[in-house]
Length: 556
Image (cartoon, rainbow, N blue to C red; front, side, top):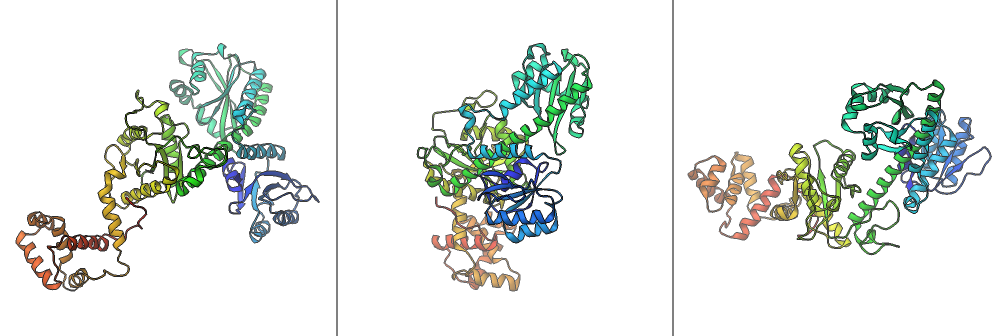
């Protein structure tokens, strides 16, 4: 199921805008609201087609609230009217959504219903039912018929989404584009030098490009835009100028194509949201969230469609680090891009408690991924694959790193592994654990000693006092007389049996160290020959001198 927020965010601000949110209101269908009609059912998204004034908008909101509708879509100026917005807030649901004023309601119904249906049953394309990708090829053929020339449909990143027939009559650059599903770098350089992409990003006007090097033929480029946003383009290989009336017809095709590209983006965004949401639940709750009707235990997350299917375990829960100041949504985009670049086409990534988590496979010993300048798809998504990727990216950007908890051998162990990975991430973030080395990856097994000590220090706590011992008296003496007895005690404990090293750390003479030890024992007598006393003192010192610890989150 999809929420109103997910739907609006997926389609983008160039199409819809949330005026008044309504929490996690879900939507399962679209309903048209004409004057006098009864407003639909719970969970419907009501389209205010017949609203012509402020009073009508307020009435529609009130009727939709009584019907428990998920949201109401209005065009401006009614959606932005202060009274209408105030009514939506007072009703505390449904959500109030604004539709861009020049958008056709017929297009809205087609686009929204397709996206909602896709969210409810995202796997129908596997069963052979037509989807927007099929429609894109049909539109490419239609455009090719209009101008009698081969055509490709590309997104804003120059990725080929569809192409028409008769590509055999084009140039080598087009053939490479079709085969590689992306415009070759040297061809991109040619078009970029001519300012093609700069004009595509700023204007809706057709662009004519002359012939280029290596036999590149002229192109007619039609921008595809929606709500002022550049979504993609139609590229036609033409050998002579195209009549204006045919260019206008291509513009009509581009308008229809824009809706398809919006739908594709929305479906991709929704699939990603559903996948990240299900993975988030799996990491938090374990077995209950990865088994369900129609899935074998441990084989996938409950539910169908865009829910992530977990590969065979055991697994490692990973937390990804990024440069300071990068919010988790940007981290998700960044690491998803990295994963795709290195061959993991369906990365298991999700945001959780303000951090970016991932799930990779702990490959059994003796099995190694295939390497050839990168990793084959068979190794993508494994711990060895991640280690390879991090070595590559960490060498160029030390701000990218990752930490991982112990292996989870069953779904119900995922929450424990999640807690461990989160614990390592917090320790690195607070400076209590050094950043991973040049490999960029730190496992909990590699930092077990730090984790054990940090958990013990956190468990000691200081909120309720020090439970006795000498530190209270030493702290009072240091504060009153300006002495450094606690610092001296910590250095001596850290270098027990080696007073010279302890003195060197304090930058004092060893005799000065010995004098301080005698004096502090006069202030607070303590048996420093006891190993247990020394351990307890060191943990108390850590808890009191290095700030508050995060709560203990797991067991080693």
